[in-house]
Length: 74
Image (cartoon, rainbow, N blue to C red):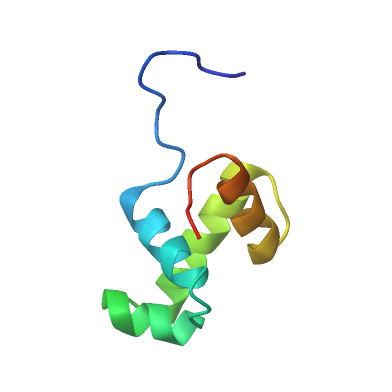
């Protein structure tokens, strides 16, 4: 179900977006955790949550989909 309001709701939370912005810079889970001052498990949870929202199976697929949707810039 698509929402066609004037202000589209952000698909990702602020933190999920931060994680993916670092992910597209070729950062590892460990790099991202250190940069955002969170645990590696939390990084993986954010990635996993975003993948679920997108209905994709992998990180790279999630990145491609987010770029396609204009949610993420490279």
